[in-house]
Image (cartoon, rainbow, N blue to C red; front, side, top):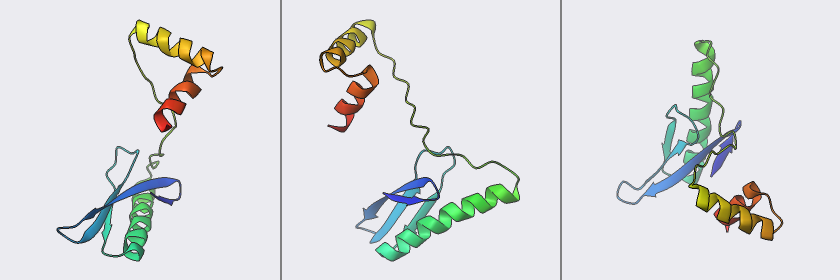
Length: 104
């Protein structure tokens, strides 16, 4: 993961094209970048974020913010009861329990 000015980008390698390419995550806007070396992909990411911020400034638009950290999850009532019971057994909030399971 790459980080710059509060924005996060992911990178993948295309072995057929022999190039790194990536995208800034968590936005409706599509911000992409590419490079052939680690140094190029890092700089391309930063340049793409800076270009996006400049584009917003020139148009007097507020840039989108990345990830609020909020995630709404709907589940059937019986699943909710089971999750709540497991969380209580571990002395965790439902949020902490689900987060623990997601990153385990």
